[in-house]
Length: 78
Image 1 (cartoon, rainbow, N blue to C red):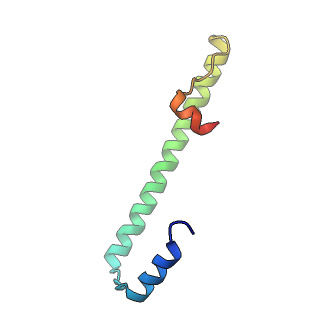
Image 2: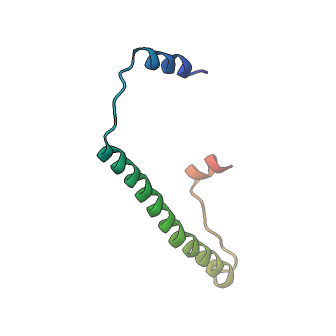
Image 3: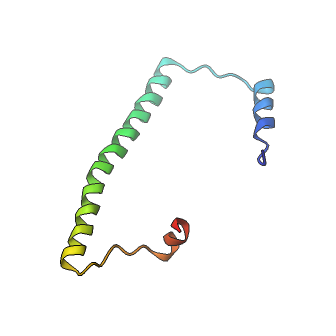
């Protein structure tokens, strides 16, 4: 590996200090993970229909004009 991850993992296993996670810390970590997933899911449910409706509106009423992607983003997509 170019980043020397295997060596870092070996050193961490050999010289690292294991930290015990309390029940409160584990609960808060799982709760935050679930909250982030729920927020992402809800935003995606709201955002996708809005984008689709904008695309349909542009196709019907504006003569097929689509969404323009900024040039900074288009170089990463293509």
